[in-house]
Amino acid sequence: MHTSLERKRLFIFLAIACGISWLVALGLYLTQGRLNTAFSAVSGQVVVTLMVGFGYMWGPALANILTRILTREGWSGAFLRPNFRRGWPYWLIAWLGPVVLTVAGVVVYFVVFPEHYDATMPLVREQLEASGVTLNIPSWVYGLLQLPNVLLVGLVINSFFTFGEEFGWRAYLLQKLLPLGPRWAVVISGVIWGLWHWPMIAMGHNYGLNYAGAPWLGILVMTWFTLWLGVFFSWLVLRGGSVWPAVIGHAIVNAVAGLGMIWVSGQPNLLIGPTAAGLVGGIGFTLAGLILFLWPGALPGVESLSDKNG
Image 1: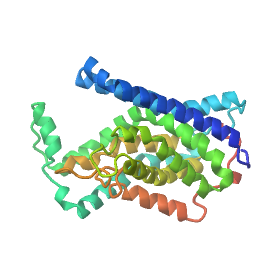
Image 2: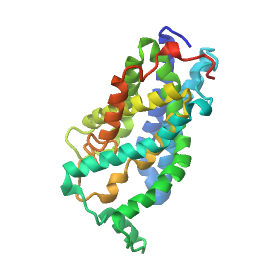
Image 3: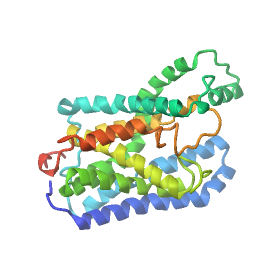
Image 4: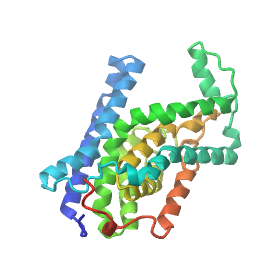
């Protein structure tokens, strides 16, 4: 593990990561209307999802691989070993923690904005009724029934995509920034991760475009979210000694982030919530990240990491 900042490798990595992802975003921007015309609504959405999942989200992982090849760095410190025997508690936290933190944010959001809460689940019922299905169970039961889908199906499917981000941001960028100190490393990597999202936010992903200050305010809110979520993921990687807990945690976050939309009524400002990417909807992740950031010794530095983690 290097103890000094490798500026050249950092520059190459960021140039490749942003270059690949933003080119995919440009392609999506230029062709999305044509895709919607060429395919049915469902098929077009599948194509867009694959472009984002395997194109945009895999930019950082490809940057990790290509940077190592171009600079002849080798594969030491790649964080690919599971290290499950030592790190299994962090795997478990990564699997269950995002659900707890998301639910906390949903509860806080509806306490602060009760006018947006509707126990009859209007959006869900409308979608089901359009398919000829009548829902006759309480909303809280329906919410609980989503958990197996989130924790199992969501984990398996989303992990293919989230590995693309985590193998870049946490398994490469984070460790390259650790010579600055763990706190600076998680802050800088979290901010870069947020700004990397800007083309997708500018196209209305996560928050739409119907808000004051669009899309710039959306980019700032996303960066705030990735800052504290990044602290949580960085803690999982540095303590667990592997990138896989972050891959798992990220997959679960993506699967459960929209949970609050089950009960939403009206037109809430998505910059605020109830999704986990909103300022209030994401309060659980913000507090968890802040605690880990401030807790003495929670984030190990470069001297505690071993080059043997390949």
